[in-house]
Length: 365
Image (tube, rainbow, N blue to C red; front, side, top):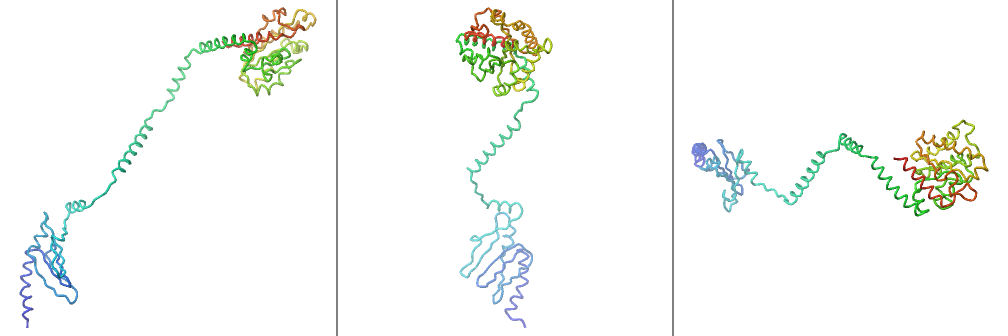
């Protein structure tokens, strides 16, 4: 036999289903110390499991379906009833959306914090780096063609004119220095050495040149030249002045090696100096005759002209400078000699130095 209370639920079951179909939603209140209502969009029945010792009462919210189906501002409500009162949907509201609206609402609720100052600094640094990289990539590098064009322009210069101007300037300076005596010789011979016998040795003993640049000694012949290689290698002079003669004539050097024996022997000795100073200019002095009295007393002076011929021809063949001193000695009649009639007075050395330097400069034209 069905009780009154049982019949009440039995009779209401059909009406409950009908309402659910109309509203497409259910609302269930489960009371277990507190009431809770949850609305959702569904055609199925909601089965509430409240646990043990709980009283269950199901009521229907006639507007439930409308609230869940409405996507234009309506919301579903989630309420909590703690015995004091029910929390309305306006107090605690959570909307369920799908698709683009859901993404939009989610992004809208997110906030990102940026340090604008740091962002601007980073952007500026990146811009500078990119500009620098672009400039380096597009920077024009000199080509081989451009280099050849520059060299061609340099080759077109009138080098002879430039050299002539330099020589003229040096000549003017040299003349001015010669007028000042020994100081002038020091300037003219500053980057040179003199290799020779007692006549050449006086450049140092009279104080016209530093002694380490006068590679000469009393009684020396051209055979002594090879002994000065180390000194020439250390100094590396631009010009090597060679001055021998009287002692070579006395010893008849080269006379056993044919008509050009002296020239061949001299060439071999000078080549030894060029081995250690290949860029040096070689300037060989002609042999100056002594006084006529001295010539008459010593017969070997008669070979002076032949020795000078060999020296001159050697210089022409090798491209060396032949320093012609005939005009200075005037055949032994010039007032340039010491009482012995062979060596020179101090006043002659500036003139001799000027003649050597001038002829080296003239040969370079």
